[in-house]
Image (cartoon, rainbow, N blue to C red; front, side, top):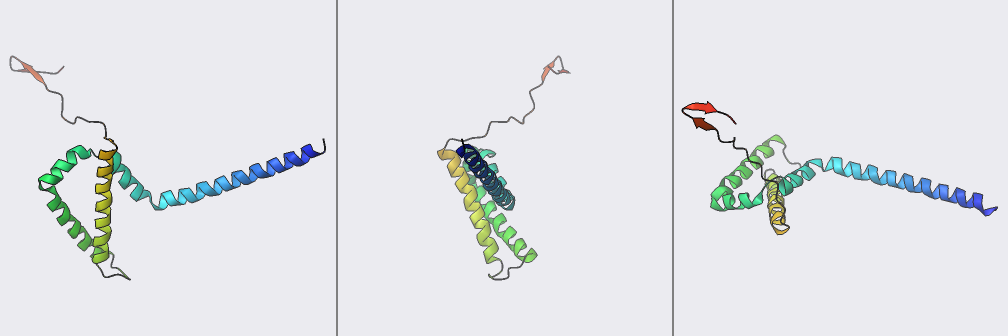
Length: 138
């Protein structure tokens, strides 16, 4: 019976350490999520918010050209707003945007491979019926 208080004390100590370590883990994970929140939202949007079955044909018909032009323009503007310190200006901004574009296209590829697609949302208003020239809603 003398071992029970020691065993209970050890168990309490181990459980308190476990709670402390789990708390530290959640704090570190919280910092990571906050630091990378925009990228996490970006990836989530392009994986689950965009129907890539509709985007790929649009890009193939020529939407890639304005997309690349927009990418270069954004890199030019970004290079003037936030000049680089270590790397040559414009080139690192363009490289970062190209990486972001490649990540976006990878999300589209992954959505197609895994057959993920967002639910279809019809934004068109329901058709209205007219009877004898009168406008009737159902």
